[in-house]
Figure: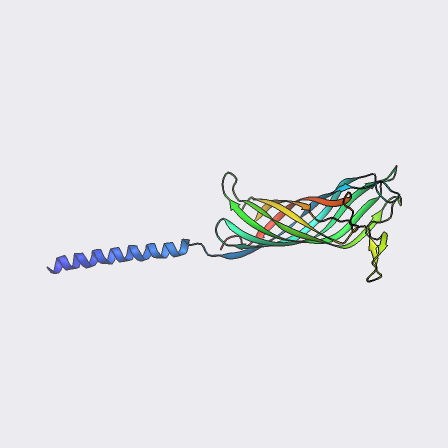
Length: 230
């Protein structure tokens, strides 16, 4: 009887050990929400989707040119697939304005802030992150270079505010729109990040239905991620 009792106790002990090990493994493998962050930098290209009447200070057309972008992304991982990203980036945007035979260049220095709903996919591409959400753009400084065929639209006065008696400029220093971002990981730290930002708000400060200026920007950046796994 004692031998059988020893066998039963040994079997119970083994079962308990296996159960405890399984419980420990389950706890270890269970997903826990966490945050990670990264930095990105690289060139951008900006264009304006516009419709304007002809005028002395109005360009005949605009063409995109290359600028620069550098920013930080903070990701909150809600699950293994979904998350929320808060990003901010400092940038220089470059547009060429064409007027007759003159091609002045418009440079703006600004700050973008975006909040994106993100998702991670391992198939068909390993480490593919997609994000979509609103962004806001603040113009901090601006300048015109090259030909003086036109005045800087950010400093050209087109009216006076009757309430504040302050000047109204042709283009405003704020706009907002939608951002689509995609990042492809190479080794869970380095990635290539593509951002497409389409402005929904009108840069023009004059409320004329048949005229508008809306920015479109694409940035291709190297992305380095910290704390990518918990």
